[in-house]
Length: 64
Image 1: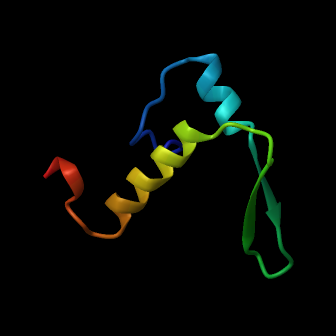
Image 2: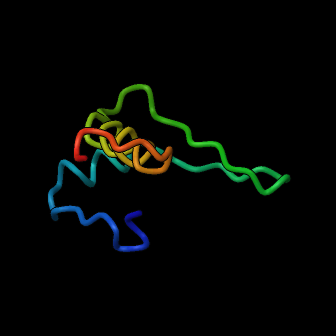
């Protein structure tokens, strides 16, 4: 959603640090694994992932 400009993020160091807590590993079957550093804070990214998942699942969520 971020890449498609459906979700915009504020320029904020904390947001960037939260995203840097994750890395993507690509598998030979073209799949992806997202891994999180154990010592990193990711509350903002976790909240965004939950919100985006809600939109993608067809539920109306809290907004309507």
